[in-house]
Length: 421
Ligand SMILES: C[N+](C)(C)CCCC[C@H](N)C(=O)O
Ligand SMILES: O=C(O)CCC(=O)C(=O)O
Image (tube, rainbow, N blue to C red):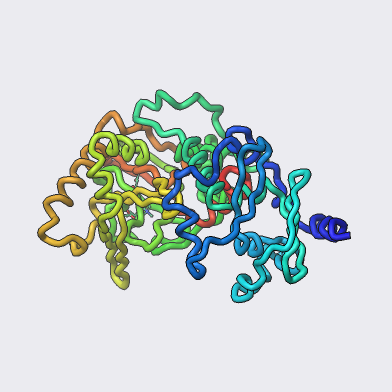
């Protein structure tokens, strides 16, 4: 009877919940001892249980290789019940009451079969869980996944020697084929950039491909911007001098996640572009000077952008890490947009400049720079949290058009295409 009722819950759950993700069910993953592994910060047993300082009774879920168990806290389990009373599968939102969770978290009975866990609670409520879903939605499982995702990133130096030669992505395919769109996302996530070729160099076509990939984000520079024809904004990007490798928007509380460039007109000298893989440089720094790496992961540095009517200012570490997985998430590097250094006491500034110099030296290394020319017809999408971009000074006419994508918007689509979790 109980089981039948469970089944009816199951059929209403979104199929996503039961997606059989290879990553989570693979033998290697299940072999992993979920509790003893210390690949994330802290110890979940100590961190998460402060209820009356008693050790809660964990429920042991036996994983398919039998010798491993996943220990789940009853409150977590009750909070993650996906039955229609606890979860609205249409809006993908919870319905349960956080203040009642604790009193509802006593398990009366449980059983496990066919990849499902059945739980009967002391208040009579019944829950059913898919075990792969449980694994992938715990702290332990998620940290593991983030590590896997980080391992899948391919970092590179200026020679690009370690990158496979990839089929060019053509405008026509990108516009009409969803698989090509998903490939664009895969490349941006994996390598930090993608080039789309044979884009007609009109403003309207540039906008079409931009919007096909993701929605444009409006910033102080507007939604769709153009440089080389106007001095709308007081920024070196609008002038024609050399620009050293940098990331944009270090002065926003959240820098725009991605940049799009399309050079639609060039008639002059110079103006070649380059990219540096900030995650590669970060790896080099960690090896060369782990103390500098650690320092730049913690020290706060403020950046600013000022023009008539505006004054943006925001601080943060140069090497920003995910607070849970501790994976490097963003490099904020723009030496021009640094604000007065008010975040470091004078007694420490010597150390600060020394570490910053070490990083800047690596950023400037010629071997790390990948040089190319942005030319009419090629649209480039660049990860602004990972890659640094720059260009040579130029003379003549050079029209660069483009936009930003917010991190949230682009990552939402990447998740939709199954590129990230
Ligand atoms: C890209 N676009 C020309 C619109 C703006 C350039 C802004 C560059 C600025 N220094 C920054 O780092 O954010
Ligand atoms: O002109 C370019 O190629 C790049 C401009 C730039 O770096 C910027 O606007 O942030």
